[in-house]
Every structure is written in structure tokens, then in C-alpha cells.
Amino acid sequence: MSNRKKANQSYIHLMLALFGAAAMSILLFFVLFRFDGIAQTFRKLQNVLMPFIIGAVIAYILKPSCNFIEEKLTIFFSKQKKAPMKLIPGLSVLLTMALGLAVILILLVMVLPTLLDSIYSVVRLIPSSMEAASDWLLQYFDDNETLSNYIQEFSESFSTSIPSWIRTNVIPNIEILIGNISSSVSSVVSIFSNVLIGLIAAIYILGSRKKFASQARLINYSVFGKKWAGRILREVQYTDKVFSGYINGRLIDSLIIGIICFIGMLIFRMPYAMLVSVIVGVTNIIPFFGPYIGAIPSFLLILMVTPVKAVIFLVFVLILQQFDGNILGPRILGNVTGLSSFWVLFAILTFGGLFGFIGVIIGVPVFAVIYDIIRKLVKYGVTRREQNNQEPPASQNMESEEESNCP
Image 1 (cartoon, helix red, strand yellow):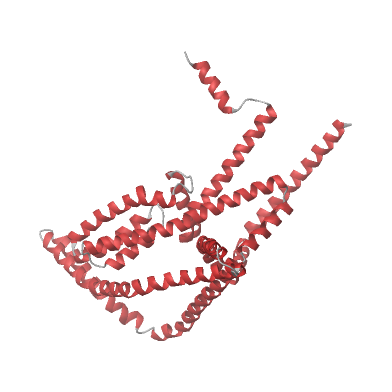
Image 2 (image 1 turned 180 degrees about the vertical axis):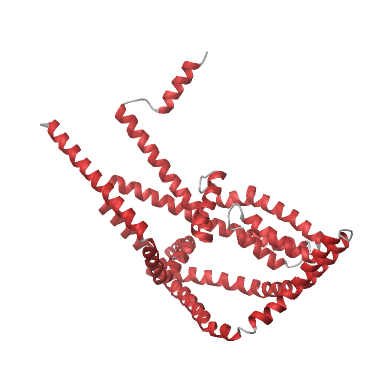
């Protein structure tokens, strides 16, 4: 009787597996043949939910600060008599949002005017710098008539290309440009409205973060069993640890690097100190390739003014990046992802190619989570196979083989 029952169970499992494989095949073919429609639907859904996506990102970035402020307020009010303990969550959210907006406003007031002046001076300096560079090249390659003619033609075409472009393209199409202003304004208004609604959504998300967490935990335990629900919860906690540690760490690290770069450029009296520091700080958010992406345009900007200081800048940036990679970065980030350099490069290139700049930023923590899930599944599969076969662990087999091979 037991053998017949086992046979029926095996038959049922086989039928379920075949049905699942057929359903997945149909779903795969449907996605492949209807990919454009599905992608368009997702884009529409993304546009509708964009304010909430922005709010969720803002709330996630500000969550550690909100937890810290709430903890300190709880300690402070607990020592007071008749303290309004119910107001602590709302007060911590308001203080967190006010602190975040104040930091952004201070950075804009300090950075934006100098940044605009630097950009304006760079644009104004480009023609004279190109002329000086062409004169230097003509003087250096004076003996080579062919190369001298090529350099002179390139310099003349560059100096006349901008006015010619304005005459032939901008002025005749001024009506079209004016007509497009309305759409540009509407897109700008849409962006600002999404950000504004996102800020409001971030306030509600931060205020209800504990309630959302408890609801998600309840759904997890109601859908899955206790064993798998616990594993899913631990994986979610690990994902939160990786993402919060990595993203917040990269932001803090890049801000510190930008400030150090600005101070160093002021000490060496280099041109475009604010503009170059912003470029170096922002590109430092990108792992692995960020220092090189920021150093190349910054070097070219300084090279237009003074070549000697451009070389000094390269040496300074090289020392700064060594300090960041060996001292500052490990102290702030630690080994949050647990990935080797090869997998970091693989994650950046893969997710960057699939999702662009956003993929470059979040590729490393996403791949770290995927890598951790695969590692745990492989470990779980090996453990089950060893238990079913009642074999000693693989490590013990390897040790025994090594002992047998020893002379």
C-alpha cells in the first residue's frame, strides 16, 4: 500500500512538473512575441508611479538618519516628565526631511554660483585655447608641411564652426525652437511635480516605515511556511544591509573626496577648483571607473589654462584615489558586498549595459545579493545531497584524498 501511495505521489509530482514547464514555455513565448507591448505597458506604469518611486528612493536614503534621530529623541524625552512620546515618530520624520533639504540647499548656495562661473569661463576660454594649441603645434611641426596644413585647417574649421552653426541651424529654426519651449517647460514642470510629490510621499513612507515592515513580515509568514519565511526575511535583511551600506557609503565617500579635492586645489591654486571638485566627487560615485571618468575631463580643463598644473593635478588625483581606495573607502564601506574585483567589474559592465547609469550605480549591490542567494542555494543543495546519500562532507572527502596521496 505504501509503494502504491509513493507511486501516486511521484506521478502527481511529475504531472505538476510537466504542467509548470509547459506554463513557463507559453509565458516565455508570449513575452518574446509581445515584448514591445509589455515594455510600453511597463513604461506607462513607470511614468504613473514615478513620484512614488522617487519618494521611496528618498525615504530609503534618509532612513538611517531618521532612525538615528528617533533613537536620540526617544532617549531625550524618556528622561523628561510628561514627555510627548507619541510625537517622536512624526517629529523625527520632520527633522530628517528638514535636515536633508537644508544640506541640499546649503550645497546649492555654496556650489552653484561658482560652478556656473567656472562653466562660463571654460566656454569663453575654448576658442583662445584652441588657437594657442594650434599655434604651438604649428611651431612644433613646422618642418612637416602636410601635418601643418592639416592642423591649420582643423583650427580654422573649429573657429568658424560655431558661428556657422548658429547662422545655419539656430537662427533659421528659431521658430521651431520657440515652439519646442512649451514642451520643454511642460517636461520641466512634470519633473518638478514628480519631485514635489515624491518628497510628500517620502514623508509618509518614513512615517509608516515600521507599519509597512510589520505588514510585509505578516504577509511573508502567511504565504510561506515558517522555515522559508524566516529564510526570506533573513535575505531581505541582508539585502537592506548591502544596499543601505553601499549606497549611503558611496555618497558619503564621494562627498568627502570632493571636499578634499577642493581643499587641495585651493592649496595648489589650480583653476576651476569648484568645477573640478564637483566632477571628481560626482564621478567617484561610480565604482571602479569613476576616478578615471572624472580625472580625464578635469585634466583637459586645467590643461587649457596651464599644462604644469595639469600634471600636478594628475599626481594629486592619483594620490587622492589611492587614499580613497586603500584608507577612506574601506573604512566607510568596509566589505559590504563581499565581492571580488572581478565580480565588481562584471556587475558594473553588465548592469550598466542593461540599465545605463542607474545600472552602474546599483549594479554592484544587486549582483552582491544575487551572488549571495546563489551561494546559499548551492550550499543548501550540497547539504541535502550529502544527507540523502549519507556521505561525508566534500571537505572531508578532499582531506581524506589528500591524506591518502601524501607519502
